[in-house]
Amino acid sequence: MKFTLTTPKETSKNLSIRLKELRLLKKWKRSTLAKRSGVTESSLKRFEQTGKVSMENFLKLVFTLGRLDEIDALLIPPTAQSLEDLKKSEKIISKRGSI
Image (cartoon, rainbow, N blue to C red; front, side, top):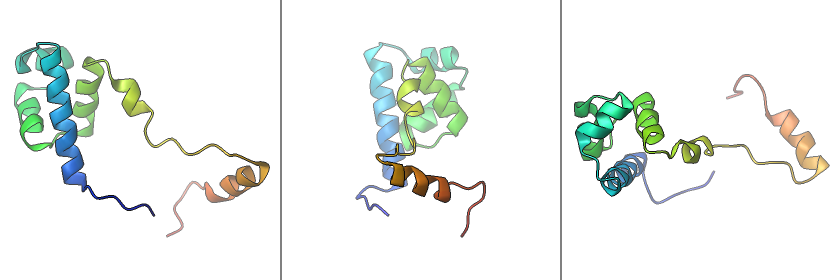
């Protein structure tokens, strides 16, 4: 397991700050992004202030800002570097968790 110095709460707040910066770079009001994304202005305001928003609304906002490809690239399992790695990965991947 990898350890990091940031918490989920800090990460969500950092993402909300970045999203707000992207909105402001486009010179959009909060109401503009809300209308274009289909997210209520109150949800957008809450996200920008607290970092709290549903995953669906977060993805709508990111999509509207043209950055969904960055999110889509997250959590991709590593590719096998050798035949041995490939065999190991086949054993590890199951349809259910084991713990």
